[in-house]
Image 1: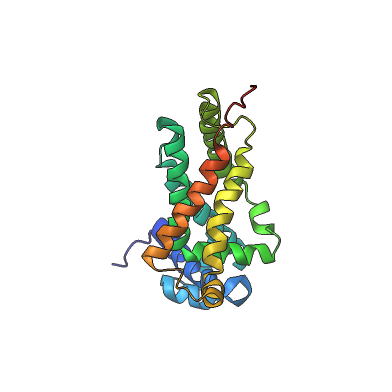
Image 2: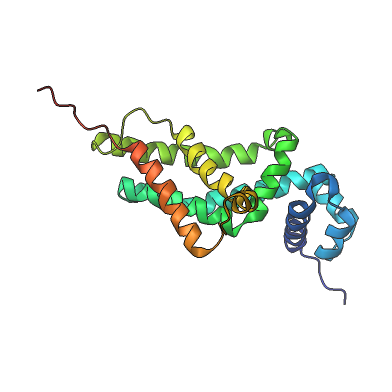
Length: 213
């Protein structure tokens, strides 16, 4: 008897194959034939599930953001000391970008399209809202305790954290060549993580009271 098809398994294989293909070649350069071959699925199934190549690319972006947001939730920032929570977020973001260079390549490619696929996805917006609220809560707790300044925008803070990590890894080859350093060794990464953590924490610290003497 012919084995019964499992649509969920087929869709998962397609997504995994598409993730690799889009990360390597971008939306324009990716080939549906290659994705179908890697996923052991026919092209008709890809179009059936995702409509077209653009729809599949959007699904891959949704999966990429779902993965990083889920991993961030595992940090349990709400149940932690506020400074420790922010330090862990910085470390997670930095290490995630190093471990998942495919994620950065997908973002680079999507920016070429001015985020049109992300903009049309309700799923990605839903994923971001709880995370921003969680970070906002951590900052508010730190402000109430007098350890964090009171004027921090959680979105601006996250952009800073992501930007400091993103720039380092996306430009590691050119910067390493210019300055004569291998920026991707464990020691170099540890130094960079310590530096950007200090930058973020020093910014967040509540200003000391100025003596009126």
